[in-house]
Length: 300
Length: 337
Image (cartoon, each protein chain N blue to C red):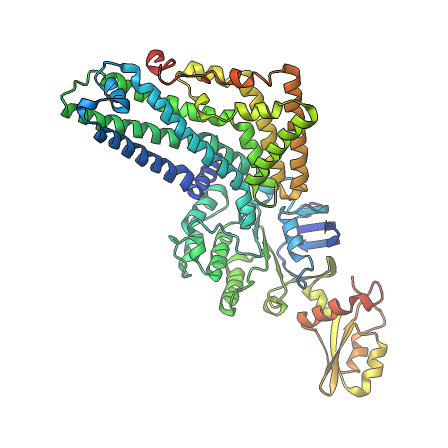
């Protein structure tokens, strides 16, 4: 695979820790320029998947990240890929300025001035040691370093975990304004779907190490449909095999997958109520709680 | 070398400097201060009529009556410095690849375009070259301070300083030779360094403890099961710091190319390669790598012991200075320089 429009291609990726299956036969294709959310509950395999992509974990299967296999040449890969792990991992005993010096020395694509510009907009004191910074500041610093590196793929594993809402919002704002453009691909894992829903162009749901959904946001709008159904239409709606039903006062929200069965059309659904595109969080809950009860092939 | 390579290595080594100031700066500085204070204490303790012991040794050098007398003192102190350095380096190496796994900062370090080989080799270069230079510098500086203060004291007693030029020459030559001795010591210890790095890269906790206890257990097992002492002989031949001191460059070259040194390089290289492999998180279980490399190294050591039957006399062979008698200054640099 060396399609210039594909940033990440993963085939039959599997990983087990002893008897625990962390990833099972994952296939993913993420186009260049996508902002892809890796969504899953705790323990679904998000961290393992992202570490495998960054060459930090030993896995089976095929991996291609912008033309590199992370297992054979991680150092070369890291010239094109930046990775922020799910825990505050900047070396605690070094001063901020030491870390900036280090990245400047070892990374050929690092722009110091850009990083410093970014840092001056925060409260970070560059003379301080990392361990003297708040958790939010460490994340800001890491983001500042990463933003100043001209890479084509950015992998963020729960980047805002443990931060308050102001830092989280600031983080995603900066990510969009400073980093994202059509050449750059971003992978973000999280279990807080609502916060990044509006950013995403692509969505991957993980459940117990399997990808239960891998789709673009556009295709989700045409593929899934939510209808609020009045009680008198319940039996008609049930007959159309919804993938999830949630009770509401005086009605119920039915979620349908329109592309799985050819005969299920928007027109049919419109007779039950007002069809609309489901929120990612609702889709997530529906797919992750119901997937095992549904006929095979309903959810790819 | 390209600009990129120079920058990369500067970054890698500066990281080690910044993270290991205790080993590199504070400990030599303390040695320097303590060493100099002790010397001053000695000087002030002895009244002129009771010239004896250490002071008379130094004064004998200063006034030219016994030009070679300073050398054994220097040698003894060098050995002490080397001992501290070796201990510090052992802690450093055992902790190096382990500590960033423990605090998870490896996730940051590994996200930079630096290969596992570069990461491990940088630590080796730091221990093999940078640290010895710092200790040699502190040692020579301490010697200079002692000489200077003793010289002032001697002047106050109207003792002529006829020997001072010779001593100054000796010290000047010592800067290079002491650095060389310290680096040679580290080269000689390469198998030990590789052993520590391997454990640092692979074991889940307490790498120093695991490295030492595994080594001791294996050497005991060899004795019980095979009745031989090849591992023990390797450990014994590479433990005392005084045996590494060299007094001229030819000596250093000879030692560097000796069979024992080269055998050590081979084992060391094997162990370091194992550490690099164990460090590669995308290439399988580090403990399996550790077990494999340890097995190969053991086989080599035991086979070498069998073939050459040198297990018994290795200690003597590897230590030309083993029965070096300080009081006679038998190999004093004054004669060799």
